[in-house]
Length: 202
Image 1: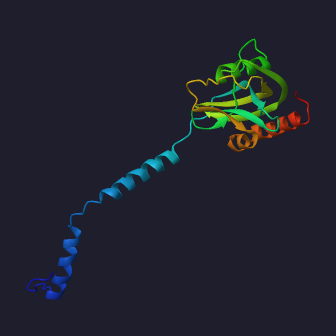
Image 2: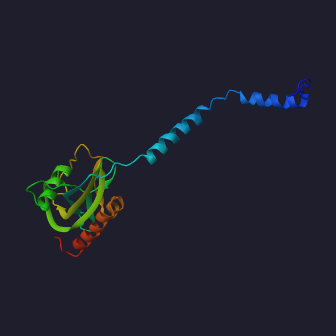
């Protein structure tokens, strides 16, 4: 600036700067508690979605066996099926791992006894097998389940489920078909019904 000249700001210019300065130094208001909670939940969700999955280190094969247990009603006109409810609330059939030295049929009998308390029944015929897979930490589990048709022989025999179960009950066939959680077991139940109705099972 040259000597002898003085810079003068107009009142209008000063007024324009003042509000801007106030905004620059304004203390932000705290977010409402509800919004803070939502943003915290969003951060947690985002972290979970983008969290890197553990790589699969091993493939494990697990052979299992079980049975579709049925009984005829007193008038012989309907079929009832015994289902168990697992710890997650899913209705399914008794089944479990095949132990060393056991055949699939032996396992089906043992698992039915352990999971239902039944003793008076016949393991009649093999219906088929189902496959499914799931992850267990860094392992991929490939499970194959052999399914047998099993007839309960004593309608008065008491049921005794294991502690981990949420339920065990006889259901009319149509209701059991609606309740069962696994489509492959549904298909085998329909095959079983045809065998029973065709007189293949006494």
